[in-house]
Length: 401
Image (cartoon, rainbow, N blue to C red):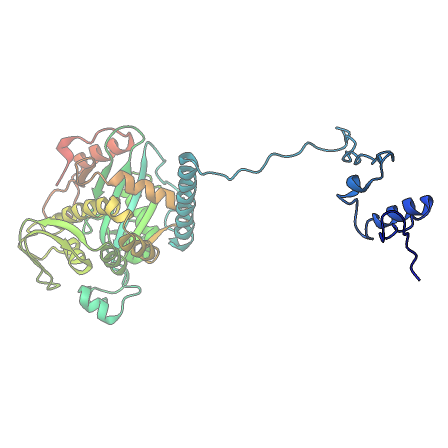
């Protein structure tokens, strides 16, 4: 039953009884405790009882620092790696390196692909080597690698009808001096009567039929007194393939040429001769355009060689892959060199002979006594050979063109 205080205030209710002092403060603190899992409440300051000292909170610990490492035990940190940039010099150097490797590859390919033969050998009484370098250049009638259709197309003629065996339509000596004298390209007419070792006196081209390159080289050395240092030979098929490989050779023909023996016809005028026409041009002697027979033929041979070498050495051929690579592939089958010769020797010959068309090379035939070109003029021939031996200028009086 509720108790009321009925005094002066009439029927006012009595205030609720106060709880004991000790329990009241503890109860208040219990109500203001934070919930589990929560930190300090933002209302703690407002609910902190009066007179109670402010709680002290420990400051956060300072960040942990690693102790310094000894300089001797650890290498210094590396700077960030930069991206390499190719300068013009590096690009140029790389291109030069690629070019050198390319040339080296070509050299190795030719060095081991070109056919070799024992053409030059020592023997008793051989002329001693003197000034300059001498090449024996031979154009043989070899039909090696030609089919019956090729022989008919090139009008090479029948081997049996020609007497069989190997024969030469072209015999030349290329002299490269050691000084600034002009190189010389000398033709030896194939019908020249000379002494062939072991076979008496005969036409010089018979030496090739009787004993091949070795006997021919010995015969030329004995007849001229010149020491031969290198040998190069090219056959019918190889000659035509080289010409076709570079797309023909540009020539200017003075007169119409109609060979009654081979049936090959070449019109007058400037034109590009293909392999068939070029072969007919350097072999032609039965024509109104070649009244001196073999003398006109050897002159045409030197003229064509000059045009051929100039065109091969031109940038238009060397930098044109459609000409250069066919030329490169046809050279090993076309050429035969002495066993002691190398590609750099052949390159030296080509460089020396490229001035034929521009007059930088002396071109001549051995002086002869008649149009048949069978007998050499002894006095003039000796002057010519002596000039070559000593690297002297060839006298104009002995030049025959």
